[in-house]
Image (cartoon, rainbow, N blue to C red; front, side, top):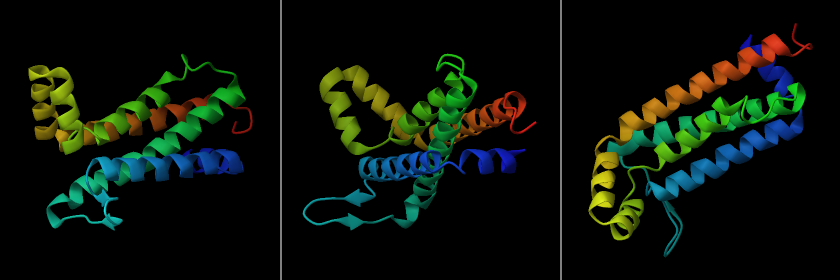
Length: 160
């Protein structure tokens, strides 16, 4: 079921390019926010040994977000669904991307300065539960992928 849907959706170059752009954009932005990529004074990419799991989760989130967004866009265009009907894919991508950036230091400083004690508490919570939140977002993205593939398979005449 997945193989046929992926072959159908990604046979269109625009969905493949969309997926790759989202993957690269999220991977770079989440790596910068999570302090794996440093841009000043020179470009440095460094993943400490203690953070390999976190970086791997960021890569998975970025890849799944690209796939889910492409599948959701295909489903909206081909089946005439609205974003409201296919909201699982877009909300899954949004939650996945936001959970990927939850524990970073720069976000914490902004939250504390903007929201005071509440921001400090939220940042502390997000930092402590960063890895479980990323795993939950991966589960949400997997479910969104499953729902999108199931919807395309059941409603698209090409695949029946």
